[in-house]
Length: 282
Image (cartoon, rainbow, N blue to C red):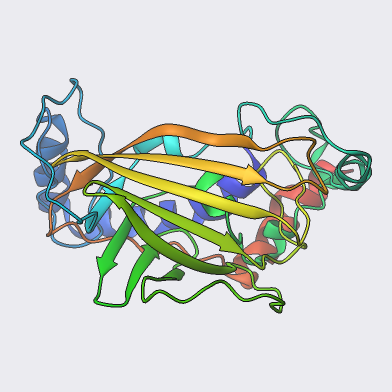
């Protein structure tokens, strides 16, 4: 298990132990629910993310101009090894990548050498939040914007749909500047720029520049299925545009699904270093 996974799993495990000890009846109830194929979680709080055991059948036609709801990629959204493949690095990209020391992926280093900013509880940033730890998230549509509310690090993004253009000379942001439009009745396209160069692109330590542009395409296949495609266009870091996700499947969860709190706490990160990381380097 990677360092980043342990950082969050340990406190969550402690919380679960407390809950299970104090409420055995709830444990039995949730355990029974988890065994039901393709069934919604019955818990009203901290809903478990449980992938259906069987392929889901078509759930009815997709609503027009609507991607709202709670969506989950289940285990496929974790991606601890980074993106499956990317375009070749430019000389700048290769130089930047050589300074990143990830805990996973093809350039993995030993625990004590990792310099992933996420380990110190820096924001994951965009699009790393799509390429690593894509836990359940909620999409809320308003008249002039679409909000993406993510479980991981408990952050949100605003995607403006009021016709504004992207800024010409933006100050950098962890999650950039985003505008969206409907390509057709069932396809929503998002363009993002102005991203902070300090963030890593994925868990394998792949870099990006401040010039990167990201295009997300959300295609509503049917009532309960959403396909996500993410294109990276960063000519400073990569020799050509490439797809980080291609028709990546997201499944709609019930409206009662309660998204857990998953926050990187600096105090917990420090405890991890003392208990796990530092002893591992000796």
